[in-house]
Length: 123
Image (cartoon, rainbow, N blue to C red; front, top):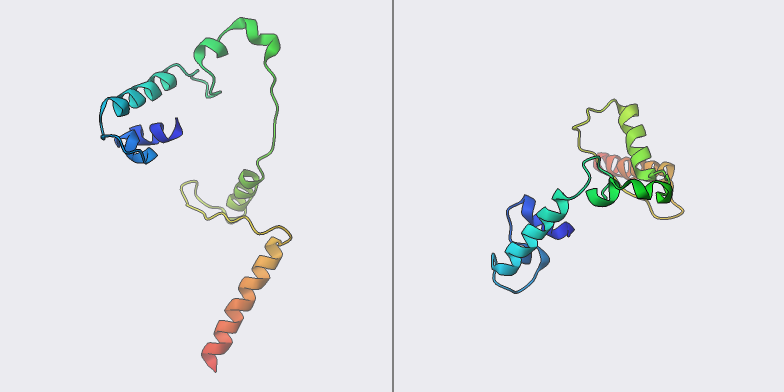
């Protein structure tokens, strides 16, 4: 469904995005595009992601289980933006270091690479 939504937003045939070999903009592409629009139109407007028919059904009140997790990537991005006083529209690069390597290791490595380049340039 994500690929079909992507195709719809960019006015591309779903078959091209999915890498399928049927004719572009044939019946299947049109049906996929319309189906994605129907599914999205039936979603609850609050952003929960559930179909309106489920999300607005009072009988599920005692069956809804909510859990919270912290996205560590998002937490680090927010902290970085705050420390750097970045505008919300500033594009940032995110990298997850290999297990066992820390940010301090990475910063030390970058410093050592830069130092070696500068020493090599002055020689």
